[in-house]
Amino acid sequence: MRALTWHGIGNVQVDTVPDPEIVNPRDAIIRVTSTAICGSDLHLYDGVIPGMKAGDILGHEFMGEVVDVGSMSSLNQGQRVVVPFTISCGHCFFCEQGQFSACDNGNPVENQDASEKLYGHAMGAAFGYSHLTGGYPGGQAEYVRVPFSDVGPIVVPDGLPDEQVLFLSDILPTGWMAAENAGIQVGDTIAVWGCGPVGLFAVQSAVLMGAAQVIAIDHHPHRLELAQKFDARIINYEETHVGEALMEMTAGIGPDAVIDAVGMEAHGFAIDNVVDVVKQKIGVGADRGHALRQALLAVRKGGRVSIPGVYGGMLDKWPLGAMMEKGLEIRGGQTHVQKYSADLLRRIEAGEIDTTFLISHRLPLEEAPAGYKNFRDNQNEWTKVVLKAH
Ligand SMILES: [Zn+2]
Ligand SMILES: [Zn+2]
Image: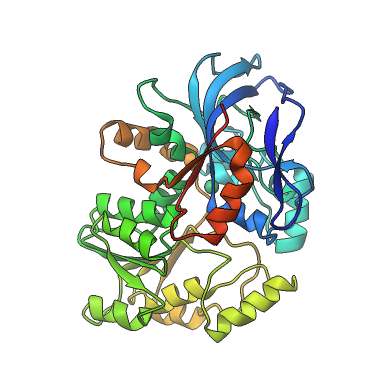
């Protein structure tokens, strides 16, 4: 089969690789119809996530048709499914509490140990990502093996086109959980850093959860325009001082909750971020924390901080004093996709949530390398790339 494979920084290729096979009775094989490039794939493309090997198949946002099942799969051949990016056993202590992304069994123990050595914490499992997260072949391919297929995939009705449901794999539940983690009360003001796919879904979710005012922060004019579709007020941080603008928009109080949908590759010319960039480049720091610091300093006293942005390791200059003095509540985490799938599918079917506004480009799988390059280099116009694998 054909698959998008990683070969080093800025180097991905479509190669011919062996077809996946059932190796465990709970497996299923999916014939991929649609798959997307995620902002967190760009962290691999930029080489800021360790644990990659040449030839790794990328992709953790995918859907398709079930073509083969193991004896313990709950799926049937011919069903259309969307597959969560997290790989969860469904039966461990964490899965039973609905904390699917914290599953103890998805990621083999040796990888958990390796990430613990590097970062101080064990990582869960995901498709098409670093060997620190299991090294599972991803879904930017014609076919993919789905482990624990009786737990993750959600069956979607035939009437719904791929593009309406594909993002149930990651970015829609991630944006939704980001808004949930912000503890939104009706009438709140919520500020969202980053108008990438997750940030935009967080904006849409915050409105659905009753926020009176949502403020979106980015520097790409077109991405800010997309946020305005949901009546968000916008701040272009290249033109405006973010902290001052937020105080002005909230009568001097600050936003009730803030969402950092930027993560480890934050831009910004502030000195703290320049130091982070240098440390990341020479491999002594995992993260660039500019957006997060700005969010922590801007949120109102007693406010909530939600962190869906991806971070890897130890971050310097975390404004611990602001956290303490202001009495902040902070929540983050990889998304517990399985916990949200059914409710979000229902909302899509009911027309409450639209996901298609985000898609700027549709490419055949063979053109995925150009998709990666443009998604990274032309972020204003390339807001989301969907690859057609069949
Ligand atoms: Zn993703
Ligand atoms: Zn589990």
